[in-house]
Length: 155
Image (cartoon, rainbow, N blue to C red):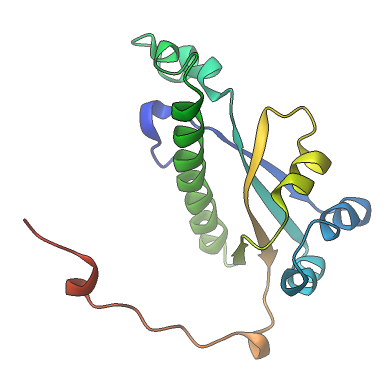
C-alpha cells in the first residue's frame, strides 16, 4: 500500500500469461527483450490510467481533487506517469518479497502495446516487467552504485 500523490493510484496492470497474449506482446518487443519476456511465466504490463482522476472522489474523498486535473492534460499525464511508476516500483518490491525475480524493461514499442492491450486509449503503457525465476547463469553481477555524495545533497 505504498503512497501515491492524492492517493491517485493510476497504475493498471495486465498480466500476460497465455500463449496468445504472449504472441501479441512479442510483436511489440525490442529484439533484446524477446527471449526474456517469452520465457518468463508472466509479464506484467504496468500501464497508467489517464482518467485516474475520475476515481479521486473515492480514493481522496475529503476534497474535490478531481478538479485539480479536469481539462489539464499535461498535469494528468505527468501525475499518471510519476505515480504509476511509483506503483510499478512497489509492485517489483512485492514480487521480490515473494521470492520471485522481477525484470523491468522499457524496450518495447509503446504504441503497439497500447493498441494490443489498451485499445480504448484510456490507459497507456509505462513499462513491462517479466516475473518468474531467472536463470542465474545469465544474470549479471550486481552493478556498482554511486556514492552518496555523488547523488545527494544535504542542505
